[in-house]
Structure formats: C-alpha cells, structure tokens
Length: 455
Image (cartoon, rainbow, N blue to C red):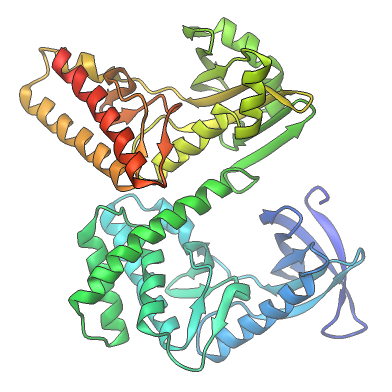
C-alpha cells in the first residue's frame, strides 16, 4: 500500500458507470494478503473502506458484507450503512460504508477501563446486546469485542461476514457457547462474575435460570478461554495491531510495536550482540547468555540461546527455537493472568536454512527471589503467608491448564509489590496427555518443596 494519505480511484459497481476517488487517510486494520481497512474521505464525508486482496474470495466477502450489514439493519439493529461497492484500478474489490462518528470499538473501551466493576458493567451491556442478537436469530461465528462499535448509548455491530442469520431465535446450547466467549474476558477463576453474566443473559432472554445451565456454562467458559488463548498466540506470530513481523535474509522475528516505537528494528538486530556485551551481564554460559540493557528508553533483558553444534542447531530448526517457544509461553501466561516478564520481541538468526542462534527480549522485573524473600527476617509471617497463598493460586491455575514449568526452583519466582512473577520459561510445557502432565507436575512440585525445606 502507498504512503498515507493516498488517492484510490474506484469504479462504483452499485452505479455501473460511475468513477469515484477515495482519499485514504488512516489505516484501521491490516491482514496481509487478505484485507486492509482505511478511514477515507469521499464526497465531502468520512467513510470506511475495506479493500479485499484475495482474488479468489474477495467477491464472496463483498457479497457477505453487503448482505450482512443490510440484514442487521432490517432486523432493527445498529450497523454502518453501505454506501457503495466496487473495484480498484488493479482489480481489488472494495466496499465503502458510513463512518460512525465519535465511536470506539468495545475492545478499546474495555481495555481502557481500570476497575473490575467498570469492566463488568461494560460486559453486562454487551451481554444484553448479545441476547438481543440471539433473540432476533443473529449468530456471530467470530464473536469478540472488536466486532462492536460504541457511539454514545448506541452499540453498532461490525464484521458481518461471519454472521449467520436464522428465522428463529438462537437455541440455548448455541447461545450459551457464545455467551461463554463473551465471559472469557472475565478471569476464569472469578466464578461469581461469570455466574452474574449468565444471570443477566437469561433474564434478557426471558429464560428460567437452571443449575444445569450454570454447569454447562462454566465448562464452556473454560473451553472458550483455551480457544481464546490459541487465537491470541496465533496473532502474536504475525503483524497485527500490537506486533510487527520482520523477515530479512538471515533473520526472522516478531517485535512489539510499542517496544520499537520511533526506532528501526534493524538497529537492534544488527547490534544486538555488541549491546549485550556492553550491558549488565547476568549469565554467560555455554547454552545461553543473558544481559540487561537499556534500549529505546526501556529497561530490558535479552537472553540469547547459543549455537552449540550442527546437530543441536538442526534439531532446533525442526522444532523451532527456544526463543520462539518462550515468546509463546510468555503470552500464554499473561493471557491467563499469571505474572511473567512481558515478552517484547523474539529473534531467530539463520545460516542458510539452519537456525543458528535465537534471542528473547523481555521487560526487566525488579523483584526479590522467593528464596531470599522467605529468609528475610524483616518480612512478617503474615505477609509470607499471603505470599504463599498467591503462589499456590498461580500453581493451581497452571495445573488447571495442564502447564508445567520444568524448573520450578525458588530463584525462578520473583516477588514484587504486585505479587509473584514466574520467570525462566525455557522448559515450560503445555500438556495434552494427562498422565504425562501428572508426572511432570509431580517433579515441579517436588523441586518447589525441596527449596522450601532448605530454607
């Protein structure tokens, strides 16, 4: 795409012969090789234009968008008005809709709210809108808060390409599975809040609340949390609103956009080893090298996984680098509400097709190692007891999702003002086989309890 702003001549297929010119001002969303969404200017008014790049599916997507937006409005729901559809000079299909003024997506509003009470109140309002959708036979296959736009007291529905329309209200089983998706924005251990959102929904649908519904819903909630995490991990591996993927000869990496804001990623890539050498060296071993540095006004830790021999590199080329796996583990824990140093970037260095070295960059966390915290006589027994309870909850949540750490010694748990922070995720595993999980968890707990006995 051209640099913003740019003019986009478009043939209006709604009025066969009319040629229009859009001025694209701001990129709203980009899915490479699939679609780009821009805020644009047309006929003296602000509009939103979706440009579909896939030659094989673009026409079908345009048809779904047009039908979906018009059908939502027919059924009495708020949705942007379709202004026209057409094709660009190079053959890409586009659809132009009205821009809803003074509006924010529901996810942006939700993320901006600070207190739990505010977040819950907001989710309850979306819950009531969802009940309205279901009552009118509207089923959003890809339900998430980004599909709702809020303008004042009005809630608009976006992305109709994934909506299915039925002649009857959505039945209970399907409805509860979707409500569980909405409830996945609530922490999975907050049973009181998830029960309340179920209650609000059943009232809105005019249903009688039943205990069996609550049991089904809580199971669905756990399932949807797992799906949400899988989607989030996939998103963390491509260019998106939060990340940028960098690929050049000899390198592949993902960077958080805020981390590199105002800087070129290549500045870091080309000098990363020399910057580590001049930083505060925390560990220098044969397998890995860890250094704390300042970059782009951020205090970060870089861990480099070294090349050992050709067989070692070949093995990690096949199963992906440790940095790649730690990047995913870090994002997984954060999505689960388990504190860990925030992953800011990962980088893989190649020689030809062979992975040679890899790097994981995380925020520096200033904390006391759990072992030292327990030995500190200035800390009261009451505070220590609360900390033990926090660590237990952390471990219980890991168990709930069949996650083992692999090296659960006390030096890998930091105590901060906000509670325990889990570090060194190199050996972490998310298990699919239950007996293997039990075996690994037993080893984790044995390692953890050994350190307690040694205090």
